[in-house]
Length: 458
Image 1 (cartoon, helix red, strand yellow):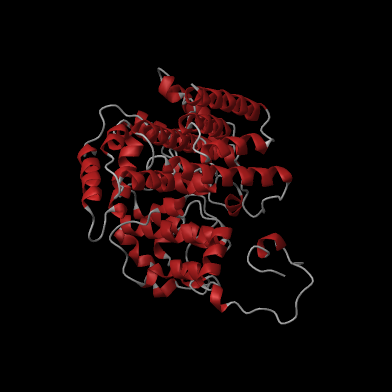
Image 2 (cartoon, one colour):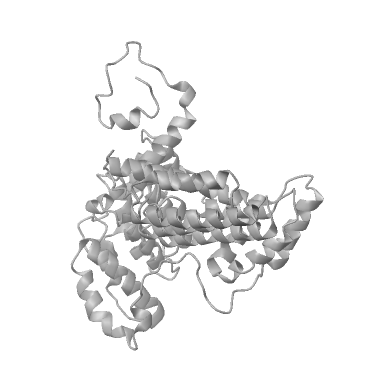
């Protein structure tokens, strides 16, 4: 009887600890106690459900979210430190949850998969970082970890793959499963177990679109247009909002794009409005990624006049001279995509008559893009950026010196990059070439000292 009663007592204790932690989330001892039960193997099924309840609530309430403001370091406050600790614990616990898919009964393995996918769903709806430019965000690293467990080379996961088919009914999971799968394909000598798991998963993956559109990781926000009988009644409101400027104009731009794309709204001055939004101030707002993302959609048509598209390319190139480093890379890829869509714009790459600022016929002050005379100019600004101090920026600017690729650059890979990301990449690349100071300084007195102390001990 004692062996039967023990799990019941543990499940009651876990429910009590979960309630206590959710009522007072500044007490990490309660969370660590649940993890201790989990590590000891005591009623792991109840532990999975308890951890799922805790972290789905914390993701929804943004308890682990730290807003990153461009050009401003994250404050080292006790609150932010605790959030960083929670994020660390979340990553550690997610790995423990995935480990249950390899050990234990089929019931425990199935619950481990279910818990992992539920957490992935909540993180997609409530990301740990700002994802302004994406309508639907899928935590790909976590999805890849789940697929790696499914494609085990140690155990037959037919029952788990059958469970996973429930999630393939969601378009985002189906799409990214197909996208991730090639990177998980064994390159040589796979064993029989892996081959069976791989073929079993491949058999479940459909190649056609789901009949009903469903998103697992979509944001849970109420979209007004889908509930309106006559969405075009919002036209005047959106037009007025577009004239306000700043973040409001950017938010209105999303609505206008939907009206044009879905409801056939005719707005002839939309490109003039969009053109006017590219000002130096845009690089210092948290909505800049959304502007680049929406602009890429608006300019995706290959039937737009080349003089109009050339104006956008020139304006961005001119702004790149004063833009932050991470935004210069976005601009280079953006301009490259515009040239790929409009091959006639290659004249901007080889116009030797107007390859300096003094001979440039482009009129930056002209508000009408079609009258800016950009098509007769050249991209001398991009050539200038080839001498940038950062290798990643100068490399991005050299795209005009080589034949253009056959496919467009994927802007989503660079839209959320920050200066810190570039710094980390350069440090890892040249870590062995760092020259140390001979005389030991008293402290990190220069700006952003906390950042420096992550890589040098003073």
